[in-house]
Image 1 (cartoon, rainbow over the protein chains, first blue to last red):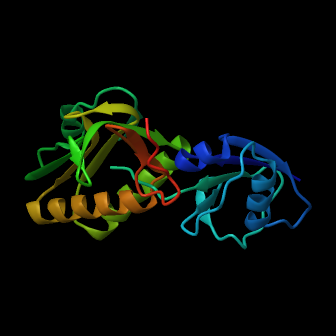
Image 2: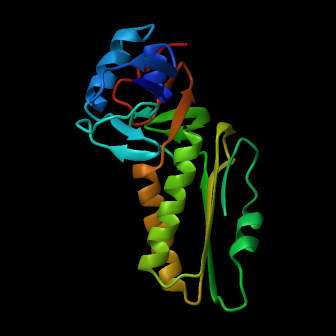
Length: 81
Length: 142
């Protein structure tokens, strides 16, 4: 299945891109997608312990399963306001 | 009313949007870019949003405070892109029949916004830049 991954702010800077597309086997989790994003990004990046993930605009656990066509957002600590 | 824009914010637009003759209190909070942070001079800020999710989360926060406090209307605007010193990055307007729920809910809204809404702030200071709150962000030399 195909998962679109978006990276933001400092994470995007470190990975060298804000948009990735990864191909994963059925049943893959958010964690699997993060691993794939680390493999396929232009630059080597580390997932900080404070990293959060969202699928289709909702925060999800890293153990959550993905579905074909999902948009996975990798969200470093937010700092709005 | 939820606005995410790269244009300067006008608090009057939000205040007018929440005002009603049945309300005795209107709180307007303005978040302003200050010229110092963490012991150093700040030159300007740059904000980035994951817009569709940020809009959805802001709506959830509006629903959350409306459920918890006796308030009437809520309007929120967040600026993205470059924000210079003295300019507004955030405006929240809350109307209520009475002042206490308006004050309390406004404060809660801001606290929650800083926890869950996917918006990021990059600080440019003399000699570098840093993503605020990001442990991996280097304080790179310019």
